[in-house]
Amino acid sequence: MKNYVITVNGTSYDVTVEENAAGVSAPAAPVKKAAPAAAPKAAAPAAAPKAATGAAGGVKIEAGAAGKVFKIEAKVGDAVKAGDAVVIVEAMKMEIPMVAPSDGTVASIDCAVGDPCEAGQVLATLN
Figure 1 (cartoon, rainbow, N blue to C red):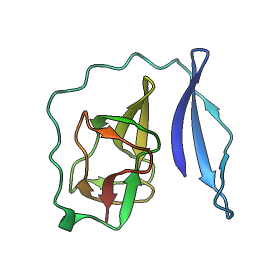
Figure 2: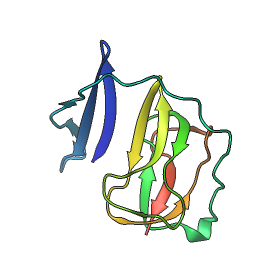
Figure 3: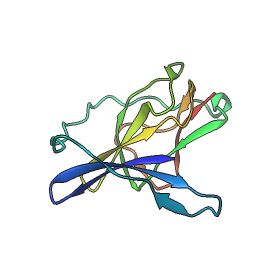
Figure 4: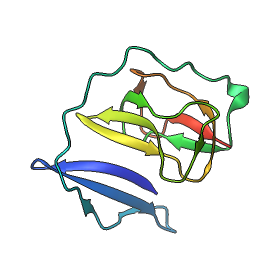
């Protein structure tokens, strides 16, 4: 499952997309947010260091859209639960959380704040 925030005519919606057995994505029921999204704040200039490739875990957290890394919410060694935001990607002036697909421990952060990313690019891994 992938989570997206979509804004239509100033109203933000949280959308979860599941992959069905045929491999084609189908949208789940959207959930309307109570308040419109606030303007993004400036990113901190400090960037998280990239982890060594030997420390990579087996569960990948991939970019859901092309954009740039806006914020890193977790660090190597942090325990995360399924659905917790690990990396925030900014795409088309929207902040999109890349979430942990399952419970685990962050094994590597493979990006830094300000890095460009492509859809499907591995941003972090979990054990």
